[in-house]
Image (cartoon, rainbow, N blue to C red; front, side):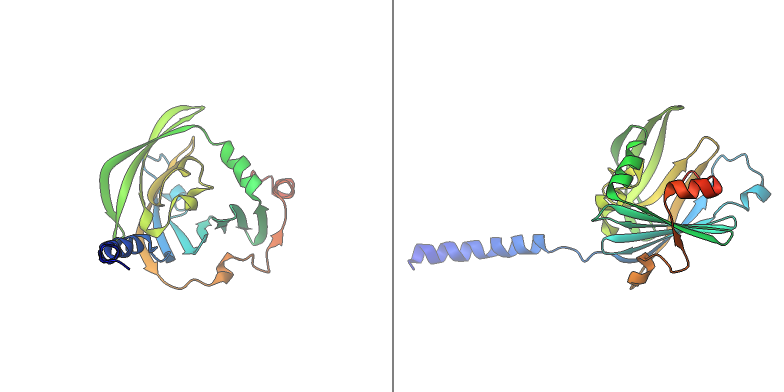
Length: 227
C-alpha cells in the first residue's frame, strides 16, 4: 500500500467511526406511561363526573402497546401491534368480557373515517413527566366545523408508528404525552404525569382466557355497541 493510500485510510477512519456512532439506534422504550384525564369546559356536575374515567395507562414493549382505561362498571383495553398494524379491543362491561380482533385492513378502514386534518409543527416545547416534548397544532375539519387541538409528543418513547391507529394523530412523529379527544358533548384532555422504565411481560399483550372472542357485529347485536 502506498503512503498516499495509507494517509487516506487514516483520514477516513474518523468518518467511519462518526457514521457508526450516528447509526447506533437508541434502545426502544419499555415501560409504563400514566396519564391523568381532565374534562375542560364540561357542563357536567361533580357527581356526574365521578362516573367518568380519571386515569389512563399505556404499556409499551418493543413494537407493541397496551392502553387501559377504567370506565363506569368496567374497563376498556386496546392492544396494538405497530409492525403488523393490528389491534385487539378488550371490553369488560359489568363482568361481560369480550375481545374483538382488528386486522390491518380493519384498522385502515376505521382510520379512513376520521375527518381531514392539518398539522402545524411549532417551536414550543414543554417538560412533561421528565421528557422535553414537542408541540403541534392539529386543525380538524369535521361535520360540525373546524377546531384546533394542542398536542405535545416525544420521539424518545417511540416514533410515528405508535400512532398508526390514532386517527387525527397518525402523522405525529412521537408518543403522545398531552392530547385531547373531542366529542359533541365534551372534551377529554390526557396529560402524562409519570413514566416508568420497567420490564413488561408479553402476557400483557395477549387475550386473557376469560374473554370471549367475538366480531364487532356480534357485539353490536348482543348489547347494541357501536364498537
